[in-house]
Amino acid sequence: MMPRRTNLRTGWMFGMGTMEEPPEHFEPVALPHDWVHERTVSEDVPMGASQGFFPRDGIGWYRLILPVEIEEGKRYFLDFDGVMEDAAVFVNGKPCGDTSVCGWGYTPFRMECTDFLPRMSEQAEILVRVRADHRPADRWYSGAGLYRSVDLLCLPENYLDERDVTVKTYAESTQAVLTIETGTELEVRATLIWSGNAVAQAQGTGPLALTVPSAHYWSAENPSLYTLTLETTSDRIEIPVGIRTVTVGADGKLCVNGKHTYLRGVCVHQDIACVGIAATRDLWRQRLLLLKSIGVNAIRGAHHVHSREFLELCDRLGFYVYEEFTDKWHSGSYNRYFEKEWKADIAAMIRRDRNHPCILFWGCGNEVENQAQPSMLDTLKERKRKIDTRSQNFQMLLQISSVRKFFSVF
Image (tube, rainbow, N blue to C red; front, side, top):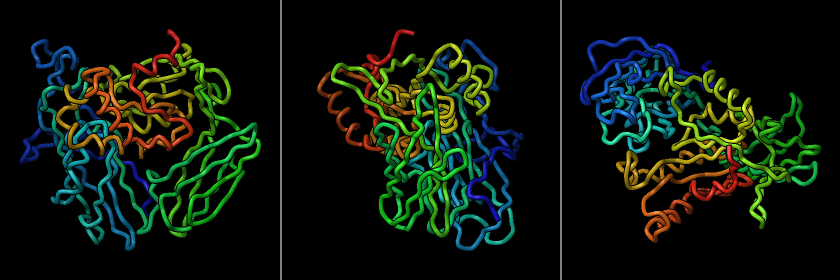
């Protein structure tokens, strides 16, 4: 029986082709992969300094031969945590999914491939076409390729979607209450686990509530995590949960669990020098531990959605995170996606990340055009309406200029 989630890290082949045709010859690669960083630097390349003087142009193709046998009553999805950029996915020669959700290279997306997989014990061919020929690129090193995780999901017909689950935590003294929107009309049993022991349970078809006595609070100093399991008759998922309260008083002080807190923060891009954007979980862990060792407790993910692995590490190691979905709006590299895809891109960020205790703030833009002018404020209000600020106790929609007051000089 196939597991619920299978990471597709190995077995990939890569080559440069055209928009219409994959290459004749492929070379083996492992994910994460950044083909730009494998090239030779040159001072004469377009967008030289911002792209580290790496030549970025081209159309890359990835190929994976996947042995799979369809199980009756199951649905299959390809789960991409981000592809740089403009990905097109083909399964056994057929276009898969909706291409409108996989343009911006930092946006996670999921495509159902059930109908394209073989019904017998055969092999499936997965092809992913990736573009890196847009102008302009980002104002920082962008890289290109399958640079984040790719998973195959094998789910029951009536499955639980972790992206539809919303967990809210409320706390008074040592007792906490969790309210859980399960995202399904099925009957669900919820169990909260601490150190291997069930500390609270509830079951029902609507929103569920769990009362947690002697609660352990999450903070950057003490990143205490519970495990929430949600079960139906056919499916089971696990979600890490951090119980914390966050408030901003009339005096402007930020308090976490009742304690006045300064954010000693840094801005972090997703590239790591020796590998470009093909950063593994171990490399991120190493970098975050180094930041922790010099007193950093907060990170601004500049200027885009970061990987799921990065946020999971921030939960476990203890960092407060400001997550923003893009850099500029009507100029820069996001301009080509803004009008058609901003709603889908914001929704993808919120759905994937809203239950991370590390996230304190949502950001909807950086150094955007016409600062504080009516046109800019109207655009900001529209983005604010889109973001579900109820997804956690305290996840404010901000622009970077307004979050600075919570940061100490570091």
